[in-house]
Image (cartoon, rainbow, N blue to C red; front, top):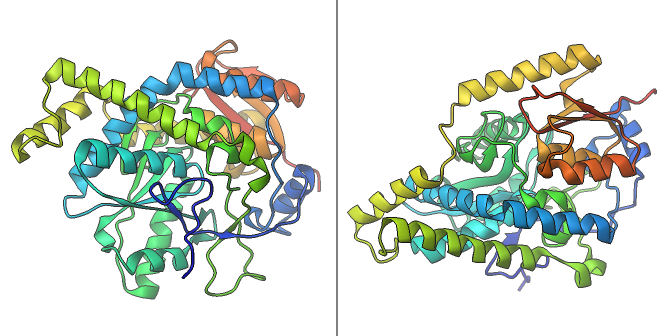
Length: 388
């Protein structure tokens, strides 16, 4: 019997449908040149991670203190909306790897507050490559397609949301199975998610770190020249980081924070929990959770217009060759500064608490910072276009 892969999580948290493998290290500047020349796709290479220095790690702990309550409230909102939109069963499918901690938390929230035993899988989706169809087929062996809920942390330009839709259309054509192409996120900056708890560009603390907050797995990789037709997409498991793993700390801390948020909500609106409520009272509770914790209306068209306007302005202002080089929002900007060649960091506020870690990263790598107070997001990072 094959033992399910869970990274540094437990099987009660998630089953990660990725193939642990070894990968050669590709330094960032070489990787960037190969990507931009078209010689290799980004999913075929990996720059090996190192542990963050103590000074950077302290920024993560500060981000937890400053943002964990907001994230806890948004997790409750998202759990409530999942419950409301999947009345006939829930199967969480988080998109590795930023979606994985969010999916783990949602699984626990659905059980604790909504009395739902949801299975949780984490699978790969890659821009231009698509979703891992072998992983989907594994999930569908035991779960109804209409129960699947695709989870991620946030949206940037909406590339992954669109890739999800396209991939599931291709899957329906190849396998004859229709799966709702709906993305559920904590923060939907681009108006491309079907369901979101917020559209605010705030600091989701898990975005600060890489593997050490995501079950010790790398981002997903896939090379069609070496992968078997039956393989899942791959990842590197950083076993050597086990003594420094914060994945369980993050989950336990956030679950405690959610409990406080839940108790405050119950104190304001009565002591009955969703678990023990009759159906009518449960629906009323769910509605109150959404209204009580939501951060305004989710106007997708306005968010999409804002995203497109920003891309046009940056393209003109900085002479950007293609939109792939523009990464809007704190989460996406962090990814650039952690694992790509950055050209410049754009900030709305030079002294903002939410972008302190970005300033640390930029300064440590001598990346210039431009401030624009009218920026619709707190941060945008531009990838350096290589002279090939």
